[in-house]
Image (cartoon, rainbow, N blue to C red; front, side, top):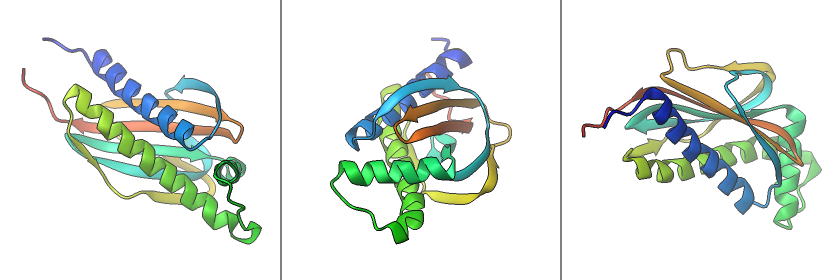
Length: 168
């Protein structure tokens, strides 16, 4: 069977998109639109990343504005019936994005087994600043998704540098 790079990219993208939708829905976060995007993460204020290892080497990123990450956190805590302390919302917001990123990556690697990829993830890392950008150079596969919800826009971006070639 000859699988093209486009077929592989589509199969990967579908698994990550489904994982993202599942995690946001399970956490009672309202998604109003999903827009495919191949844009590199640029000029964001908060980025969380999880490394992908084993059959795939790369990174999954979730990035957004400062306002969107705070809104995401408030929506999440409200949906769970938790009142967030306004004094700690900044720290909670960054931790929340890291945890959501970790959950999306974890679910995605479960779905990747459907296409015979055995993967692991690294712990999440969260960066915050004024104009962050992230790119894995020489990525074989790169795709993204703009997640629009009541919290604003969050960008899911996946970059895969190496992927184990399966023998048929």
